[in-house]
Image 1: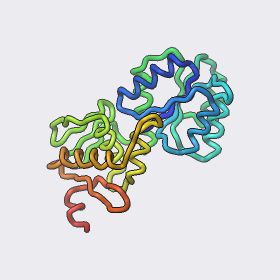
Image 2: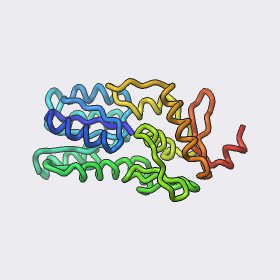
Image 3: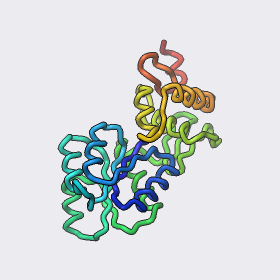
Image 4: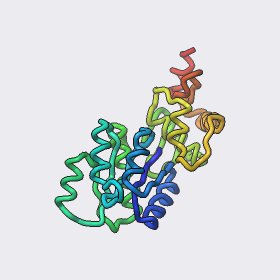
Length: 228
């Protein structure tokens, strides 16, 4: 899952980016509202973490523009002031959550997970299909109760596919959601990750099927075997 952090405090921004990257997310960071507004036009992010006190465009204006584009992008507001009027305005403008500084990184990660679940239609913290289980909190994958050893990118592939179970995901979508702007990405690498995931989940009753020209789909093994 790919996140955008908009925070003009360099130290805090770096800490947030490091924490969320360690948690397995692809994270981009910008330091002003104008850069955030431009980045958000790409529509590749799963969640926006938005500071209100930004240069160039403040957080309120960034939020207005996000909602003006009719996007359902989850938005978590960060604020250095516990001001009820600010909070009400941000929520009225379409923010999904509001976190007052200082806060713990564990709380931030928990709120991120909650917003991502909400954005996926309120899926449960643990997603299960047949013998395959994905824990969105610990970001672990299990097959028939046995935890798999997966790289960070393999976990990312698994998360994207299982959240879209039964629906096609293109290679381009996987690249967009797995890599931040400053990371080299290739569709060949995606093929390698998908191949490894497919092998590791063998026996789970589900499989990753290649849809030539369209990408991949995670589906029940029996259903996949019945399709051309």
